Image 1 (tube, rainbow, N blue to C red):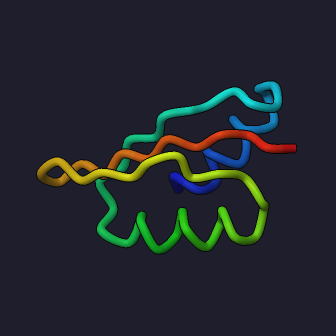
Image 2: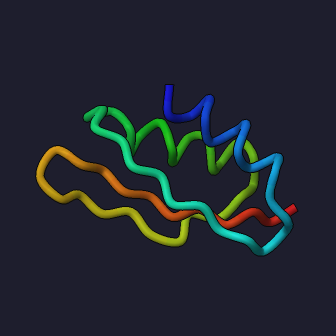
Length: 61
């Protein structure tokens, strides 16, 4: 579900703006990296803190 929410949210922001996404799904890293490759947006950072996975994504187009 995080990827669906990212896709919806990215449409509501301007180019060069960033969103922070918090997920607990262990597969989130692979999912977000695949989504980034497909869409062309930029993964600024990815960190794991316990069960939490945190990605910062920048809209590029």
